[in-house]
Length: 434
Image 1 (cartoon, rainbow, N blue to C red):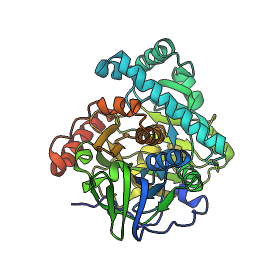
Image 2 (image 1 turned 60 degrees about the vertical axis):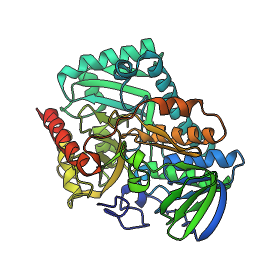
Image 3 (image 1 turned 90 degrees about the vertical axis):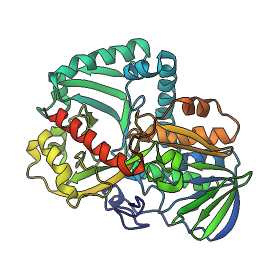
Image 4 (image 1 turned 30 degrees about the vertical axis):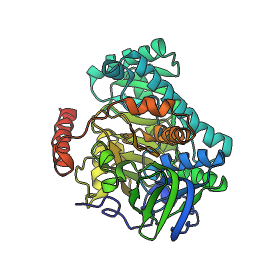
């Protein structure tokens, strides 16, 4: 069995990503040694765990946060940095799946998630280069009319007026590629440096009183009126436990692991292209995500690089040539970058669910989990931390609502689900091409 926490990276060290190379890393927090007590033990130092810890510490709770490596080490510090609107599924699909009332509630929570991230950034001066604007780009002509209808639906039914439709000519004014036929521009969404955002959250949580323990992998959780959370070298005894493990949960919690599957995604960063060349690709500095099932997502960095995420790999182990796996789709979209050097290439592991909606679960009377953000976690994972912090303070309405949304188990069990997903992804990748 592959151990996803150790399979692809040097332990306790940030990956060789563009994000990790941009600024000094915060001083390490000491590992947990021996036994300690807390009101709440948070497992996981990404968006979910850091948000939960911050909100609880601000409310006066004694919080101990445990991370197997370092804060922001996992998907939260490696992703494409896009803060999108809504859930991972669009509202039209959600209405067909869950009905209009629930879909409107999900939209409201997602809008609050966006606002939460922006408030944390701007109210506390987190330097993570937040920039407004995300483009959804249609890679097939037949998708354009559907995008137009969806924009009209959000304007009309959800009162969301920050999104507008783009025809092919307008799309070309925003993205210098002949691969796209239209799409939409969402000025209420945006993009940022996710690792810098994690560092900012960790700093705020620590200053609020959270005890952060890094290099403290959780090995076992004993349920009871006082939950005992065991690491290899210590124990936290707590009244409540919040789990923010996402795709890295592994065998720690089988109920969640059956519904949240880890998959890998890959990003490259070009050399600095210079102001003029970079602006010739994306003149207005929006982030872009396209309509492929295997999504390509990209944006410019503050120092005028192209950060491009894409490519396909269905093994839990990263492929040997990380550069080529993302460079190939990058050149399909921007052949004008054929001579551009790749300075950074990295991979990360996210958690997906069958229905692409996050999985909230009460795992015991005083143990709560949220995971499976399916590539849409910057806002919703941060919001999930706040929702679980509220849950420990007997404000359960939003947690109960999210946990009532059914999350099917992946077929095939832990041994076979990867192979089945690989077959499905191969089919959809071929459909994208043809």
